[in-house]
Image 1: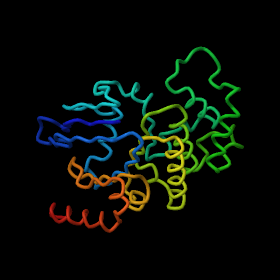
Image 2 (image 1 turned 120 degrees about the horizontal axis):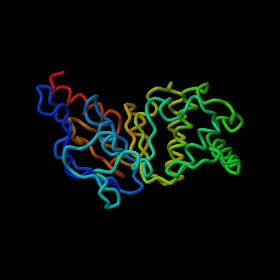
Image 3 (image 1 turned 135 degrees about the horizontal axis):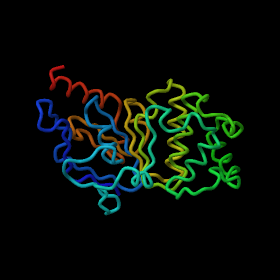
Image 4 (image 1 turned 90 degrees about the vertical axis):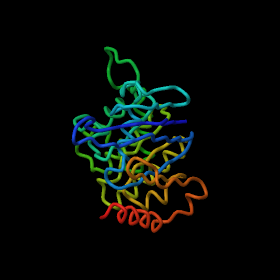
Length: 257
C-alpha cells in the first residue's frame, strides 16, 4: 500500500514566484489498484509521480510504502521497488545498446555489478520469451541497436524492462502521449496485460480520457494539487468521458478561462 500523508510542496518558496503545488494533500493507493490520473497542465499529476519516485523532495509530509517511511529515501533506492515508464520512449532504454544488452541491463536492476560480462548467456532464451510476449517480433532482433526501433517498439521494451525484476509499483508517466493513435492503443493493451498478469499496483498519468475511462479500476482527476474526482470500483466503471469533460469545463469557468 502506498500512502501520501499530508504532503506539502512549494516551488520558488519565499520569492515573488512562489507557487503552492500541494498543501496538506493525502492519498492512499491499495495493493493491486490500477489508478488512472487525469487533469489539466499544472494540476500536480506528474509532480505527484516525481514525489513518489523521489525525483523531487517534499517540503513537509510523509510517504510510506507498506507502512515503511520512504520520505527521505534516495531516488536510486526507490527504483528498486518502483518501475517507471516515461512519456519519451528514449528515456526508458539505451539507444546505443542492443536489445539484448538493454534486456540484460534491466535484468540486473538493483543487483551488485562486478567485473564480469554484462550479459549472462544463460538468460538469453528467457529474454527471447519475454520479448515474444510483446508480439512485435523483437525476439528476432536481439543484436539490433534500440536506437533504430520505432517509438512504439521502444516504449513496449521500456514497459517490459521496467517490470522484469520484482517491483511493488509501476509508474506510467503519459507513456502513450508521444505515439500515434494505433500504436498508443497497442501499448495500452500491452500495459493492461502486463499489469494484470503481474498483479502490479499501477499509477498511470494520461491526457487520453478514453484510456483513463477504459483502463484501471480507479480514476483520479487532479486540480490545483487536490483530487476533485476520485472514483473506484463500480463507481469508476460508471464514469464516462463526458463526465470528465463536464468537470474540466466547470473548472475552466471557475478559473475564468
